[in-house]
Structure formats: structure tokens, C-alpha cells
Image (spheres, each protein chain N blue to C red):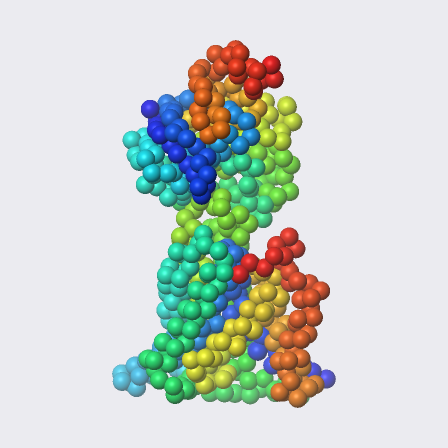
Length: 237
Length: 307
């Protein structure tokens, strides 16, 4: 198991957002968490990235290391867990190239950085055309490409993706998921959360269903696609 | 006409101090959304450190008989003092502001004011109430261009200030550290997701701001060689006004507004009695801010003033 989460509780002040979450991911898997708005999907990813503190008693282990001992920047630079946040959150005042370079801030392997940039540009040729442009001027699809490219540069043992389909036209959505598959084939484990359950279940091998901060269902994606409850609640009948 | 040009020259020198100090306010604000209200006192501390370094270097010359020229002592004084004062900034960030990073901004503002008072009164306790006179490291030479008089010190003050601003600009635009600062000014929260430690960028920013304040302190000591523990208060507040006028968090704005402030003060004093200088000058600035509350280069969407 690459990532193991046990009894994860997260609270915002006195309000508990996640209740005793348990799940695990193997290396190389594509796993998704589906759920409605406010179910706690982003909170889960933010807890893994250590952007949010986990309550006492929570256990998070990544490749045998206690995640809870790591600061957010070290989760990325030392453990290789990258995070594409909700809404992309690019640095709009930096160029495309600078956004990619910033993601390598803590990396010491200068030679492979150049190779990785080339790889990002081969996955997303549009970014190459736009590399000297300010990230704030990119279209929505290009911004999502850069957000993923940036994560690819910062660490790719595990990539966390928060709603990568959001705001994308259907065709762009599909090509985005194709790109993610390619990144996965290179060896990056992928954990994504999605509101677009149908798309996510077609893309991922396994899935968890989150409801009001609790994991209520889990299984292979194919099974969940045919599960009557999931169909009714998340796939529009 | 000559008098006008003369005032331009004087305004450039006077504005240099404001600009250098205002940069420190703006840099810290741009990355952490807080104003370091102890910054004026860092200017004072920098000036005193400059005094100490210069005195030590002069003592070294007297002791060893190695004839270091005055300009070299001055350069060494500026460099050493900037270096030492940068640690004052790092210390203030670590002890004063880091524990308050998630606290309401008012707490940070109050802490800053307290640190300022501690620096002032600490200085008073250590060095006593007497004023110090900053050693004159270089001979004053006056050049005449037409009807304008320019001293070598004025040229030096403006030149060093502009040079430091250019270096800062290069650093922010070209280095990866500067890139991280720009990123932080855009979206503070996501920066750690890039593997960048905020606990390294924040002290660095304080260090650079404090080093610039130290440079301002020494240049100030060259022009007005009397040091006292409260010298940073008024100058610091005025530089803060410059930072606001330039647009909160805007580096370019802070520099330009610093010079503008210098010009306004000098030109007001040209026309009106000097006792009215600040009343009139700052009424003008208040008027400008009434029409442009976010300053020259500030973002209009952040009109709520976060202290």
C-alpha cells in the first residue's frame, strides 16, 4: 500500500468535516472519490497535503512514512505528493514557464528538470506555445493543463486532483483525462475527487463515495457504475 | 528655474530615504498581507549598526595604520550593516510575526508597534539618551552645474538608492526566490503546494527589507549625522504612507511614491513656511488617497485595508 488513511478526522473549528475516513491506495492505481458538493472531497485532499490539520487519532501513512510529521511544502518536496487544487489556483502574475519552474523550487536534480519540462510540453503542446505568456491570460482548458503540468513538475509519486473536469468543455475534459492516463502510465498514482461521477468512474479503477464527511460506499468503478444507489444519487438515474 | 531644479535634486535625496524604507513595508505586505510597523525602527537600528560598524572600521584603521580610504570604509559600512541588520529582520519575523500568521491582522499590527517600542527603548537603555553623531567618512564636495549645487553625498545617496532598487528589481524578476515572492503575493495559500517553504520566503523578505532600511539609515546618517533612538518613528510612518500611496504590496509603487513624497515635501517647503510643510504635504497626500484609496498600483479589489 502506498497511501494508507485510517480514522481520519478533520474539523473546521468545532464543526467536524470528515468522520473516521479509512481508505488506501496502491502504487500505480487510479482512484477517485465521488460525492456531492460539500461532502468533504476537497477536505480529504487538503488533509493529505497537510494544508488542513488532522484531528488527534488520525493516521496517515505514505510509503511507510508518517504523513502527519510533514509540513505542506515537505509533503511535496520530500514525499513527492503533488496537489492540483480546486479552481487551479495558478499564479496569474507569473508566466507559464515560471509556473512550471516554481514547482521545482526545492528540487536539486537540475538535469531531470529540463527533461520534465520537455515531457510536460509533449503531453500538453499548447503550453509550449504559450510558455512566455502570463498564466492569468490562458483559457480555462489551458489553465487546467498548466495546473496539472505544475503538479507533474513538483512531485509525482502521487498526484491529488481536485475536480480536474471543472469548467471544461466535454472534448477538453476527455483529452485532459487522456493526459492524466498517460501520466499514470509513467508511474504516478492518481487520486482524484470529482463531482462528475460518471466521468470519474469511467476513468478510475476504484472509487469511494463520500457523503456528509463519511465514506459510505467503495468498490471497483465498474461495480459502482451499475450500483442502483450510485446510479440514483450520482449518475442521474 | 535654477531653484526649481535645485529642489528636484533635494527632493530626489529626501525621497531616497522614503523609497528605501517604503520598499520594506511593501515587500512584507505583498507576501504576508501584514504591515511590519516596527520597520521604521529597523531603519533606526540600521543607522546605529552603521554607526557601530563605521566606528569599528575607523578604530581598525587607527589601530593598524592601514590607510583605508574613506569611500572604502563607507562601502564596507553599508555592506556590513545591511548584512547585520537583515538578521534583525529575520529575528522580528521569527519571534514577532510567525506565531501570528493565522491570527487576526490586528494582533500582528499591535505586535509590530510593541517591537518598535522595544527597539527604541532598548536602544535608549543600552546607549543612553545622548545623541550620537554619525562619523563623516567622506569629505563633502560641492559641484556647481549652472545655478544648481550638488554635493557628492547627494549624488552618492541617490545613486546608491537607485542602485539598490535596481538590484532588488532584478532579484525579484530573475531569481527563483524572487519568483516565489511574486507567487506568494498572488496566492499565499498555494505556494507550499509547489514545495516552497513559506518559512524560508518570509524571513528572506524581512531580511531584504531590513537590509534596505539599514542602507537608508546609513545614507541618512551621511546627510543628517545626528542619531537618536526615535529617529525612525516619523520617517517610518511617512515611508508607510508612501507604501500605501504606491499601492499596497506594489514594489514599484513604493519606490515611486517614496520619491513623490520627497518631492512634495521639498516643494511645499519651497513655497510655504517650513513649519507648515508636513501639514500641507500630508493634506495633499490625503487628498490623493481620497480619490485613489488603493494607491497608484494597488489592486482595487483589495480596498479593505488589512493591517
